[in-house]
Image (cartoon, rainbow, N blue to C red; front, side, top):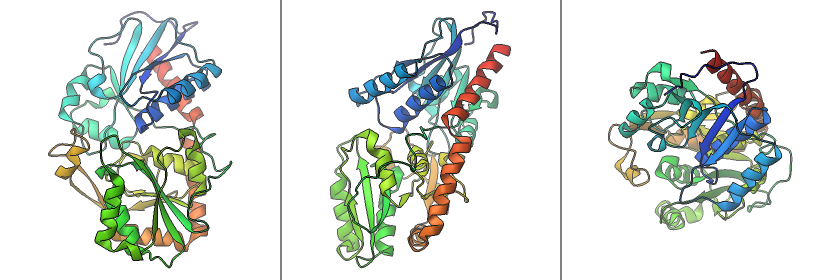
Length: 384
């Protein structure tokens, strides 16, 4: 799809037209906003084009647009790289006028991508994936290596920082485990509740705070209550649901108000919630498989043992793209229990792990680092 127009480097106003779910509070929308802001802070031309979806939040979109305006983000007036940071079914079939290069930002949470995505991926000049995990899953699904480029995820480390006010979370002086994500089977909520209630008793000064939400009609409060009755959790440690209507911009305060982030996910495309928590200095417990390994390792976080298993049929209701043949990780519950106990008993060690996590993000995943990668990519395209 690349244009055959001759390009001169000198004086060329060459940048990005970035399409994304800028009004969406899911990881996909969050990631797109961070990339555009990183580009603008890196003083490259960028134009943000909103891809609208049903759950778009106008206030969030307006806040992003105002931030971009304050950074003096400007569209490219000559040629641009067209980036479709959405999902492959929305990738274009033809090149838009003025686009020198057309890119699809692609990722998935299992060991392969959906078959229906493959033709769309071949229509793009390149597919930009967030990590080695997705580089291999796309390649193993038939996308040529030469069509793949790794652009790591990023987040605003000035916003997600250990410095700043803390939210007054329920639980008083108890040690606070925090889990935050959409209510999906893939996130491992059932495993987390089982491990927590089996490991900790009501006599211990510990609480599990759950901040979640659902796009479907799932009653997750009822599911938690049913799990509690099954396990006899009325005699076990406290679990508190946080109000899901917390303003989006208050998430850094919530992270800073907790003591440890934990989510035994079966698979992550990027693992943005881990990154945000680590940015705030929290020690993070996550599965040792998936896209989160791009920035989580045994030195800066707590990685859970696991085995690869076929995706269960029940997960298809959450995401119809999860079909027969896909595999994901099944975290080891006993290791999760032992790891939560370790963090609780060795809080000084856990704080050191959290500090190393923050330092790693500063060194590898900051806006400046991502802007440098994209500047180098623009240069390579111009010289191509």
